[in-house]
Amino acid sequence: MLRKLILLLATPAALVAQQVTDTTFHPISVTEAVRLARENNVSNITAENAIRTANNNVRSARAALIPTLNASAGQSKSAGQRVGPGNQLIDFIPAWSYNTGLNSQVTLFDAGKMFADIKTQKANVVAQQASAVTTEYNVAFQVKQAYNSILAAKESEGAARAQLEAAQLQLQQSIARVKAGAANVSDSLRSVVQVGNAQLALLSAQNSYQTQSAALTRLVGTPYFVTADPADTVAHPVAPIDSAQVMQLALDGPAIRQLDAQLNANRASERSAKTAYLPTVTANLSYSGSGTSAIYGLNSNPYPYTRGISLSLNYPIFNRFSRENNIAAAEISYQNTQAELKDARLGAQQSIITDMATLRNAEETMRVQQTNVQASEEDLRVQQQRYNLGASTLLDVLNSQSALVTARQQLIQARLSYRNARAQIEAVIGRDLP
Image 1: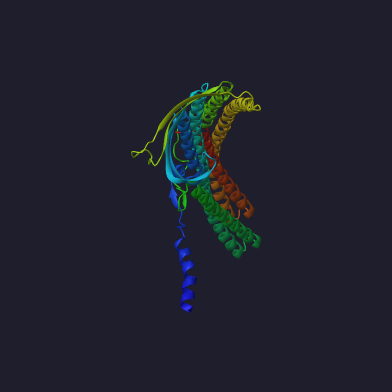
Image 2: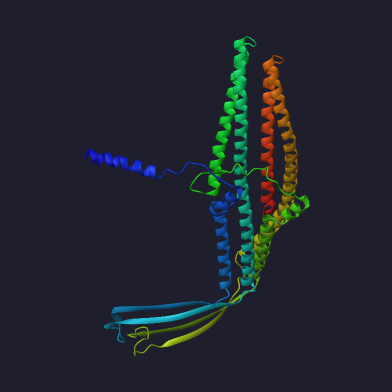
């Protein structure tokens, strides 16, 4: 009994152990990350399925032009009594009764409603395709943001390690000078604080690296953890960006194309709604047969058939303003989409101007901060030598260290702003920059 209990308790633990995933971060390029997100991200999958749904709606709209065809067959059997000619009840012999039939219906005239509906659904397909491109590049923007944050975290980690090494070296020198009587105890205590700050900066960078790597893994939808490839940095040469060309691409971006297609769909919907002011003409054709003890007309028993054709005209004289309300709703949707399209063009212009300004500013900031980092490193080296010779105080060294840390962080932030600005521009224009 005890062995069985141990086995039952051990089974769930074994199952949990089997479900543990690989926790190693696998470096991938930004191109690979975007490709994986395109295949696995839930937003992209939903957008692709929306295109399938729109294509199905086109097929349904076209099918309205084709006559319907329905087949029916049945059999029944009755028993009991019935009233005879002399109002007396007589029994009747039960027998099977069979029936078959074909029925077809087609709309002959609907004032062009079916064609307007087809045009509406085709425009919806174009809108969904543009929406899928918009979704794809919005997801790609999120992927690149997470990817860029990982690169920034790795750069911050490198800067924090350099800061920690410098702080540890300074602590050793301060302790040596305190022992030699050339400095007071406060110098060593301040150096201890600097080491602690460097360790906190290193820990913060590592936490940011893991957090952003987990976010990237969710975006790309892989069953294993992924992270950015440290070699995939902004140091790679990039082609100059033509602002005028980017502006033209933005004014024809996927968001603009989506609203333009939606405008066409609303125009067709308005045309479809106005057809309710004209009558609808339909034709109905039928072919049916029935008989007793004739097994669906397949034996020699009598089985008579009938054929029929009918035409019907339908015109709603008053339907409680439903027709008028549908037309008004279509007109309102059309006007709203017009306003949205105009605003989207203005928004694209604003976004490109803002992002290009951010890009240019980040480029210049990177050049300045690279020089600033070099100058701060040289200043710290000089101050450390002067401190070792007793020509300066520890405060001068700490100020130089702080200036170097600030310069490195500003350079990292400038690189991050540059990468994110490029990703934002690509999301607006719906294509990758060279």
